[in-house]
Image: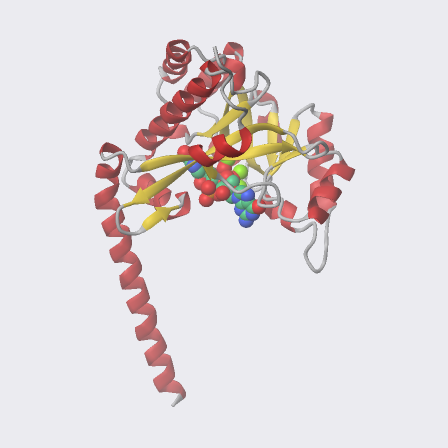
Length: 283
Ligand code: C2E
Ligand code: MG
Ligand code: MG
Ligand code: MG
């Protein structure tokens, strides 16, 4: 009977695998059209001051409003995009859509002058030598100050910093944009690269934040990351704060900004606007 069970499990497993492959195949085929058919969405997750609970900005996170599968999260389709060399196109779309949305709010006087929106970018796009100048052109056209915009990059992307990427990053820093190191502590980069990168914000990965109130609570790593970040004069933002206990520990250890379900999930632009923006002032 045990043998039989094993065989059935193997069959069930391969059926699952078959289904997963089928889904990936379908998504790959449809993703190209999704861009053209305007099915991608920018969601915004507010970032909060942990002490005052004031909003200090937001992170743009892409979603795919799929016609039959519903709202898909990046984990479901970015790997497909990566494999089919569409990452650059998607990142460019997200950058453009986010900047246009924020500039509209900015023009209405509803985007606070000290708020910053941060946009995740894969290095595929940043490898283009014109990436920084294109970004400058977009900001100018939209009349959006560079101070209102940040770019988030994951650490693993610069295990081997490419000269053209570094050049682009230095250019946008000189323009006044802010560079974030995303998912800090999960990549494989050496600390030596920190010095080369013109970044000023470190995002503490949710993996470390989760350890702050698990059964065997362990704040050692979070403490070490915060201490390192402060010593090197980075602004620190914790990701994935889900409980009041986590908020308290982070604050006690010196991390003063965060995002997470405790404070707000990522929201559609319309919800973000309704919930967090002041009414447009009559002109
Ligand atoms: P990330 O940049 O580290 O974004 C944070 C992720 O944590 C988001 O997942 C967010 O929805 C989720 N999150 C927020 N608060 C909580 C919480 O309290 N608990 C938990 N467990 N999770 C929380 P999401 O939106 O699914 O995005 C996943 C990843 O996909 C992002 O991780 C980012 O690396 C990537 N991504 C998203 N949008 C883009 C994009 O436009 N371009 C690129 N290149 N990557 C993107
Ligand atoms: Mg991010
Ligand atoms: Mg992150
Ligand atoms: Mg993360």
